[in-house]
Image 1 (cartoon, rainbow over the protein chains, first blue to last red):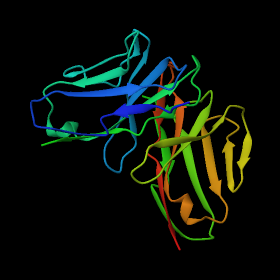
Image 2 (cartoon, chains in turn cyan, purple):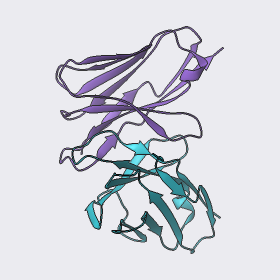
Image 3 (cartoon, each protein chain N blue to C red):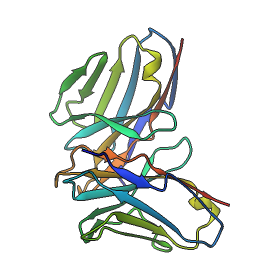
Image 4 (cartoon, chains in turn purple, brown):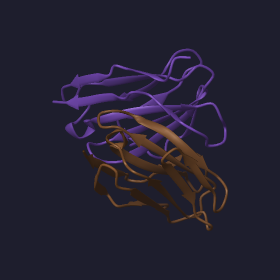
Length: 114
Length: 111
């Protein structure tokens, strides 16, 4: 059973471009969480999704950021018009349970904005 | 808002010494989880505690959940260089839809 997959692993964008981060949860998992981590800091919750539904987006900036988890395909975190402050590691995690159980993290996408 | 704190922020120990990190929540938690993140890596689940006063052991690691379910600790006996990393605790938010992670304790083990 493959683990959580994220791609790309590293992404470089210039200010004003769009960044699109993908996350494929573990097989059988229908809950996906996205987190942002700045260097040497903790994990900041961004958004929690189930298939075709956003359950909680309270941690996601209201502008420029959006997330989806379609019926088919990976979950996508999209950042429009990136700024230098968006540079961070973005992790997704998946869980099979409705209750808040163990989360399985992907390897992350390191975004660098020039 | 709900806060999860951890102390210490950093800990440097000599290999073989013990290590403890403490996690404190501003609110009562239904459960608490611990994760380890190696440098350059991703968080890996270690354990989940659910019951008040619960103590669980994994080899050299001992996890404890406080009686009031607002604090927790992770103790490592006789640290090894493989224990290097950042240890995070995490608890469900008040409204239960996602997790709040503590800032982590970064452990360095000197050989």
